[in-house]
Image (tube, rainbow, N blue to C red; front, side, top):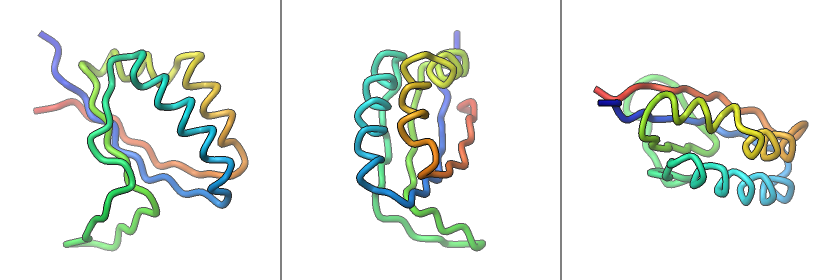
Length: 97
């Protein structure tokens, strides 16, 4: 049985208007590959360390394989192209316990 997988993203953007199209395309790709948003830009509090994400996003996928298929998909590639040049992402994929 596959374990769930979580994608954790620190999204930084210099052009919020261009990110609208990225978000639209990304939502379509996430749903297509069985993912769902758990956190998307919600308030957060740093309890230890110095991590201060601009926009924190957490997604859940049915498996690591599904998450990788999403990330490498033509649908998400179109979304990544839409944010090219105006954003930087730190993105981590982790398998559930």
